[in-house]
Amino acid sequence: MTVSSWAPLRHNAFRALWLAQFASNIGTWAQTVGAQWLMGDLGGSALQVALVQTATTLPVFLLVVPFGALGDILDRRHVLISGQALMLAGAGGLMLLAGTGRATPASLLGLLALMAIGQALSMPSFQAIQPELVSREEIPQAALLNGVNMNVGRAIGPALGGLLIALAGPEATFAFNTVSFLGVLIVLTRWKRPSDHRPLGAEHITTAMRTGARYVASSPLFRRVLTRLTLFIVFGSGLWALLPAIARGPLRLDAGGYGVLLGSVGAGAIGGAFVVPKLLRRMSKNRMVLFATFVYAGATSTAVLTPSFALVIVAMLLTGACWIATLSTFNATAQVLLPAWTRARALAYYQLILMGGQALGAVVWGAIAVAYSLKVAMIVPAVAMVVLALAATRWLPLNDRPLDVSPATYWEAPPEITDTAAGPVLVTVEWPVAPENEDAFIDAMQRVGRARRRTGATMWGLFRDTEQPGTFLETFIVATWQEHLRQHVERGTVVDQQNQDTARALAKGPAHVRHLLFAEPTKPDQSRVVP
Image 1: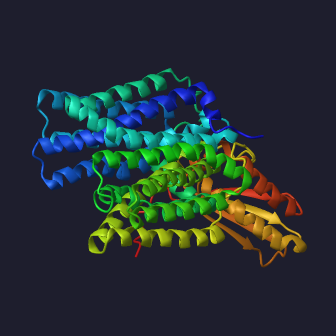
Image 2: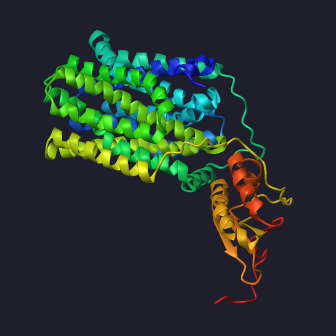
Image 3: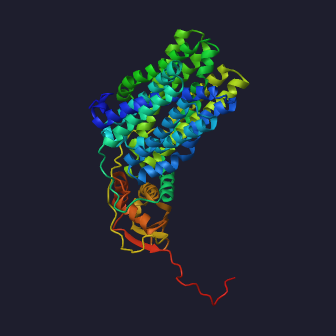
C-alpha cells in the first residue's frame, strides 16, 4: 500500500502540532537575527555577538541526554509543556526588556540560554511522540514533514526577522516568537494523550540515563544509524556555516540574494518531501541515502565552483532535497527501532550527534576556509562524504527489515522479593542443548544477550559446562531487583521474545532459571581484625 507524503497531516493531533511547530520554527530563526542585531545595538563586542550562538546551542548539548531520560520517566506531554513554557518565558522576557530599553548583553545571553534549556527539554520528547501521532507505516512521511518544517522555517525566519527589525526593531522578533510558543502550548494542552503504562512507577533519572546509555551500546542497528548520521552531518554541515561567506564572497550577493539562496534550500526540502517516498518505493534505504549523499556532495561543491547565480540556486534546491532525504531517513529508521519505554532517552543521543556534529563541522570547515580557501573547505568534505558513504553502505547498512518493538511480556514470573532495592541480582539460566544444535544455539544466544543488556543487565555471559556436555549456563547481572522486575514487566518487546523463542527451539528441554541476590553481612564482625 502506497502512503502519501502528506498522509500524517490527516491526523488531527499531528496536523495541529505540525502547524504550531512551523510557526515556532519561523519565530525561532527570526529571533536569532533579532538577538544578534540587538547585541550589536547594545554595543556588544565581537565575542559577545558570537556568544549569542553559544547561548542557544551549548545548553542543548549539555542537557539533552538527561532531559531525554526525563521524557521516558515522566509524561511526555507534560515535559513538552514545561519546555515550551521555558521558551515562552525567555522570549517574553526578551520582548519586555528590549521594548523597555532595559536589555543588557548579560540579560540577553541569559534569556537565550533559558530558551535553549527549554529546547533541550522539548527535543527528545517531541521526537519520541511521533509514533504516537501517526501509524507505524506513516513514520517516514512524518519525519519528512518535520524536516520540511524545520528547513522552511530556516529559510523564511531570517528574512522575516530582518523585515521585522526594519519595521519595528528587534523586540518585534521576540514578540513574534512569544506568540508562536503560545500556539504550541495551546495545542499541547488540548492534546488528550493516553497515560503511560508504568506498573512499577517512574525510574530515577540517574538510573534512566544509565539504562539509556546501555540500550544504545547494546543496539547494533541503532548504533549504525548514529554512526551514519555522524559521518553525514560532520562532513555535510559546512554548507550551513559557510553559505553566508559564499554569498558575500565568490557570488558577490547582497542580503536579498542570500535570502534567495536560503529560500531555495527550503523549496528543495519541500520538493524532497514529494520525491523521497517515490524513491523509497524503488530502492532500499541504503541506496537512497547513498544517492542523496552523492547529489548533496556535488551540489555543495557547485556552490564554490561556478560564479553563476542561477546554477547555485539549482544546487541549493538539490541540497535542500538531499539534506532532508538523508536526515529524515535516518530519523525514521531510528524511531521504528526504538521501543516506547526508551525512545526519548535514546533519541537524545541522536539529537546530541545532530547538533554536536553541526557545531564541530562548522568549526573545522570554517577554520579550513580561513587557512586555505572556501573551495578547499567545501570540496574536501564533499569528497570525504562520498567515500565514507560508499564504505558505510557496505559495512554499516541501514535496517530495511520491519522489527516489532511493541511491548511483550514473555518472561516467567520471578520470585516475590519485598526489598526491591536489593541487589545486585545474578540470574542464571541452564540450557540443555543437543550437540548438533550447539553452534546455532550460541549464535541465537548472542541476540538474546543483547536483549538482556538493552533491558537492564550490566553484565552477560554464556558458558559451556565442562562436566555436563550439552549444557550451557547463561548468566547476567542486574543492578537491583527493581530493575530486574522492569525487565520482566515493562521492557520486553516482541522481537526480543522472538529471539528468545529461537534459542528455546534449539534447546532439547526446558531451561532452569535461578535468581541470586548479593550476600552481605547484616552486622559486621567487630571481634576480628581484617588485614
